[in-house]
Length: 517
Image 1 (cartoon, rainbow, N blue to C red):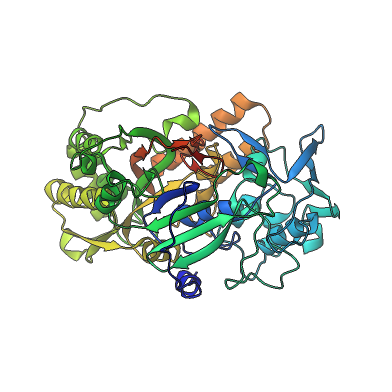
Image 2 (tube, rainbow, N blue to C red):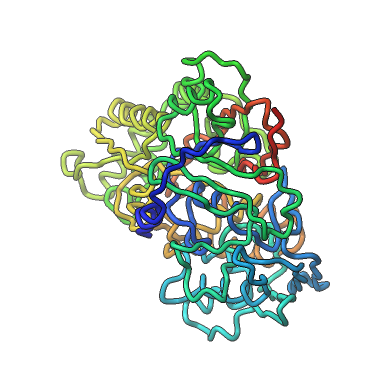
């Protein structure tokens, strides 16, 4: 996706208007890469898109969803057919929003020639995956507008989290009366519209008067500052030039908080998100399981946990955030596996018929932020001390790192995931098929895929939960990746901001907040 330069070149106007008392001032730590719901895969773009577009449902605080454009939903007794009855609503250009907009938008994301990067989120829909893989015609996909106000969706199996899916950006509609998505004229149906945008500087949103629930939107505008440096963002907050800093949009570390005078105590918001170390399993030496295990076990868990805790996140002792399975992780692990790591490393080299001197140079890629930089440096040191191997480290901006990961153009990297909905299948299904762009390790396993397929057909909740845990265990045993820490971001909120909530993934729900000076 080579879009953000195009996006911002179209909006090179000044953002220096006076800020009213009905304006919320926040920060993004990076430019959004796209404004097209079909193409969003990063958290920043998704957050902005959800302010510009409205779907059938929307996220509420916690793990709840509420109806958006859907005024009513009828679900068949077997849980496979959803009939959405749309409320009267309009696009920002005054055209009515219809069920045909949803049908055309969802089907365009499944285009076999260029499917959306998140097309797999549509796979619960009958024949959606088969169409992407050219095994059936488009007419057999279970998405059908019965009329302008009624959308009927047929699923492959009973999918308990389907309503949560419909709040995700991929499920948001784009106008079918617009021949193609236009960056020059973004027609949305959400609570806000873009007023001004300047590359690497700011984005100004204004209230969308055509939004169906406009009377409930108390903010007149949102000023978004693009600030990559967390200390700069913190200083602007202390100077009362920003109302919110932290969380997933402008992450800050506990360490940085200690360097400023705090007039407001931070909140800590756990997220269904993790930073992990991923291996390219089709690249030597990480094609070898023993080598991958050696790299994982070489880390001194106690010292790593201590360092991570001081920076704010929760050290990971399992692959997925414990909230997925309502479990509690141990606060600290004492045991060391370094001797086992050395033995596994020697075993792996023998299995590859290589010596340590035969290995090609290995570089650990990571994203530009203070936490990941320190983690990368720690990993570099740990692997040298335990395994005697020199690892180089290289920093990338978010977009460049994603390109390397999607193209499998790396050996080892620090990456992250943020769950789009509150169910472990959202993370686990990424590794079912190596063709999934988010399957960064390029790994797949027949027993793993079979376990997920069984879970998809299981209605009984405890049985399904047991199958998902089994799949997680298979993934952990094969070590295509391992988690370093689960996200718990400090969040600073000015007292004038009211009614600010977060959902289960840790995303800020800002559209219905308001300012009270």
